[in-house]
Length: 367
Image (cartoon, rainbow, N blue to C red):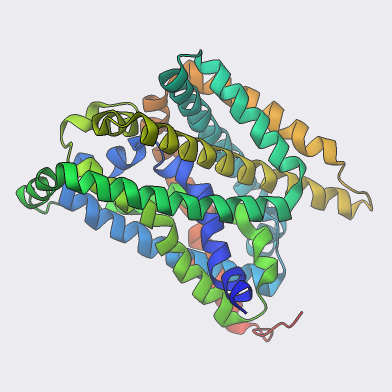
């Protein structure tokens, strides 16, 4: 019974959190760029906006996918946009390359900081792990992502508890000393927008849902589950405001300030694992889209191609990341794609998708 409840209501949210974290807040640079630069209190308000948007869009996406039996993004957008589904695919491929470039770059910097090895070594390790996971398919990815997410919540909780003991006064002072200003709604929408591009990457786990209330509850919980680690991390960032806004990888600065090599190592391992999660889920979504194409031709998608696609995509993404740099990728790339994602995914879902769900006579599809 407990396993069924977990699978129905928590697994989809944990999948979304797993995909979002590496491109959303694992390094801390994204939280700084979209939230902390406005001031600590305004950042919290913007995070609340992002969470609400995530929950709403996840709930609608899960139900639309359930009703239309869309377990890969091509099928989902053919139902939502008709022939216009290719517009989303173009946007998704661009977002995937951007996120993979970010995590490939960050993985290299982390390995260099922790072990003194060249950044390329970290990127290659990441590439190998993502290829290995995508080779084993949906069931393995679900188990790994859900399990690693629970580990992540524990480590982030310890991180916050320890940080509050060290910098609690600075955190409170910075929160109360910054006034509420304009702009936090826009920043919250932008952060939510570019991360929503990955929602269709987790549709493979929606196959467990059979009723409308399951999809709605799973979606509403998903937004909260995905933002919780980011909130815990953001509170710590507030204690280092405003100097932390200049750091390329803020998480390294805070971990160094804790002066605990053991916890630093543990946290780095967990974060590196989130990079693997995000990369595997995004590449797996592309593989599932390719597999559906093979299925329409009456063929089976060869397993070796799953791993090969991951390696080829990551090689190109790592090259892009090293050529452009982490800060520039986040500052320029995410914002440029946000409104395209909102236009081809969120807006149609809130209009065409909602109208379709309202009219459907199949609200309770049983399996």
